Image (cartoon, rainbow, N blue to C red):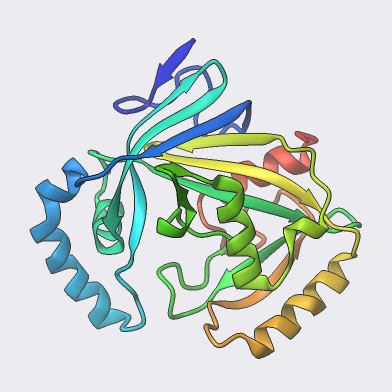
Length: 246
């Protein structure tokens, strides 16, 4: 069965519902994304406003999906590299269209059952928001024209928290959840350390980290959507995880 979300959401699974997938095949094509070509002047004008408000923003290249489909349990994508400014302009739209954002949530879990999340720093594009340590797919995650999702997860967790996902146990399963034209892909990594031990390790990393991308780390122990200023993509994940989805 193939279900496309280049125009409509995954009809097989309701929005904000976490569901299992059997794999990913996310290809990155050469050339320019059609939405970038159509909106680059407006995106550039918006970028000037974004940087005026937050001079620390960096207009690096990221992976932005043109089409996504679920085929026999595998998420298949066709994407292009676009400037980060293009994505910021896209997400400013009341009802974004013309592209899709697929991003990855590694879900670090402590030995005592807490999800370890981060609170983003004031100089980032999501200041103050709480979510799993993560970042958009970029050029360093693309190998031979295909996105390496696990590599992205390992890199983002290491850069933001200092934790090494290779030291955690995981069963290799991927899950996904969509909200409008956004697709979250997650994988659970279970550490042998307690939440307090993991938070202490992250605090030591923050003391030495020159980037200062995060403002702190948080141990989440419930699905309460109001417990922290969560990114909108987090409550469905928390409801699934603490509801026994894994």
